[in-house]
Amino acid sequence: MSLFVSIEGFDGVGKTTQANLLNEHLSKEGIKSILVREPGGTIVAEKIREILITDSELSPITELLLFESARSDLVNKVIRKKLENNFVVITDRYLDSTLAYQGYGRDIDKSIVNELSKLSTSNLYPDITFLLDLNVEEANKRAGERKDINSKDQILKFENEENIFHQKIRKGFLEIAKNNNDRVNIIDASVDQNEISKLIIEKVSKKLNL
Image 1 (cartoon, rainbow, N blue to C red):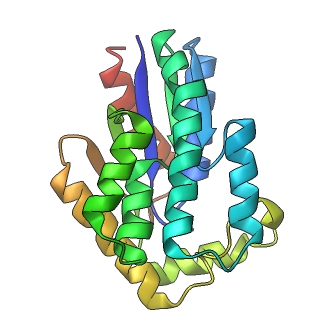
Image 2 (image 1 turned 45 degrees about the vertical axis):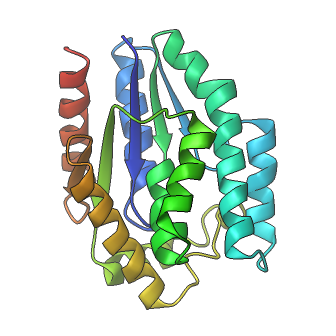
């Protein structure tokens, strides 16, 4: 049985940790799973990630189009094929991040962001999404502490934005969750990471009828 899982939230909430823990658990249980990230996961998408990391002068629209292009390549070359072969696909960020960051954070017309996301994914939405939520101050503190770890692989331009930018993103994520409460599960990211992992595994297992 295939399942498409996205793990969302702004920088510093522990998305990548939880995505890895879920993938490791499923693999140990003998369930076919794959973990991908945005932007990334294909040769083209990784090149786009490098542009986003190194070019600090991209306009908001250029930034948006690069994220959508990377997503389109990932969906068509990896995600759809794995779902067709009964994999559980876990993605570290997906279209909710684009709406939160570029729509709410960058103030790009949200209807344009949504239409581009529909186009880039051919209307492929996650079966279940976990939104890790945390107060902005604590998240920024965590994000700052990790900057020296794999910093060359991180898109730090967002972490370096003013506090108001992060507040807008958090508000955006929470509104997205409210408008998609049949898909999005809000999780308190201040809880111990093992407790969060247990909760995510329980919900995913229920979706898989395990």
